[in-house]
Amino acid sequence: MKMFFVSGNDRPRGGRTQTLLANRILPLLPPLIIAVAWEAAAFLGGGQFVPHISALVLAILGSFQRNPIIEAEGGGTLGYAPHIWATMKLFLTSFVFGAGAAFFASVLCFPWLLLRRTFHAALGPWHVVPPLIVIPLSFTFFGPSTLMFYLTIAFYAFVATAIYVLAALRDVSPKYINMARVAGAGRVWIAWKVRAPSALPVLIGPLKVVASFTLGVTIVVEFLAAPEGIGRVMKFAMSFNSATLILTGIFWSALIGLLFGVCLDQFGKRFLAWGFKGENETIPIAVLHREGLANR
Image (cartoon, rainbow, N blue to C red):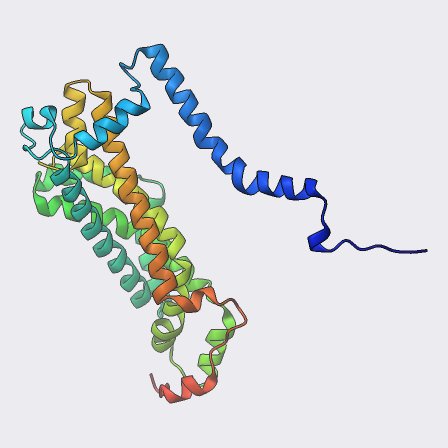
């Protein structure tokens, strides 16, 4: 009996067509369906509540440097531009401070079981109570000050990030921990030199999720009390019932989140390259000896 094998280059044309359809055409269907549905809604509503895509694009471009609604409400004569910058500054500063503090606090507490459990218990209520409740509480006790804006958003980033960091530190591969112990490493050295570097690449994905929600909290804080920012402009737009200006703010918010996610991915690939090499990589014991682990 003869047996025939089909190589990769001899695959039927139908298979190549299906592969092309799956890789090139299918990803375009969701945005195409959304665009068609959007235009249908704009046509049925007369463009009053849902603007046409062309009108929205013109509004995004035109409102960047000047907008009469923003100017009329006291938001300045430069349109959306300074408010986008204000949101980026508030979001990035608060997120970096809150997430960074959560990482260092988690690593500091991890070597000692009692301290780790106490820290985890302090985070426990925020698993149930929405951290957004901090916003009205902060307004009540501290008033609408600039420091309050930063601390409120940073607190949200701190609580959300610390939960992920503790889980990542706990789930580090035991083989790395055992190798460090064999070389004479103490628990503090293991926490900073083994657990923390191993957890950092794992945190890229969760940090993107935390950042997206932190950006949402930033918009809410600006909407409630901040004198500038995308959230503040959305409040102006609601006063004039301007759906176009609200959607413009959503566009800029989404763009900030998208760019931050891309930058975070590139940061991980550039500076946390060891996390993308797979489990076949191991820590040489010679490196542990060279670091002088004894009595640390």
